Image 1 (tube, rainbow, N blue to C red):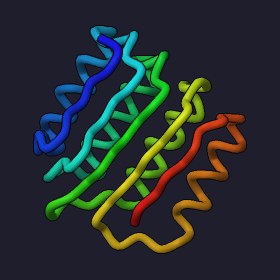
Image 2: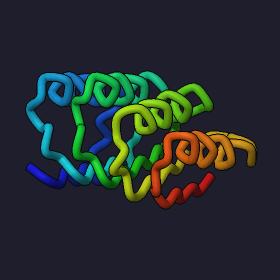
Image 3: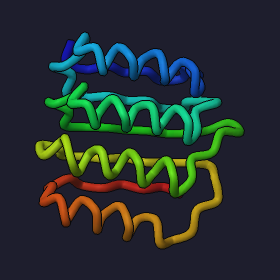
Length: 130
């Protein structure tokens, strides 16, 4: 499997934790694109589970990641920081990172994410719609 497109799934934190467990088990190690668009109920807990899966080299070929948290869920600096740290550490081939959240996050977030990616020498294009 090279592309996993989970649009309007509404998996929430529990569903993301289950998916992250599959990633950690190496069941999708060749995955290059992961889209989690319009993910209702997905917040810091689910995003941190995904970050932990990436930290264990569960997605070593990941090139494109899109996370779009909507409908009452909220990703904070904690979730954004965890996922960015994992990507810097374990996804050097990352090309694009699209992060969106309906949570209230100030303008410093994009600079933090871009700075972390620069330190990790990723060439990823970062798109953030806060």
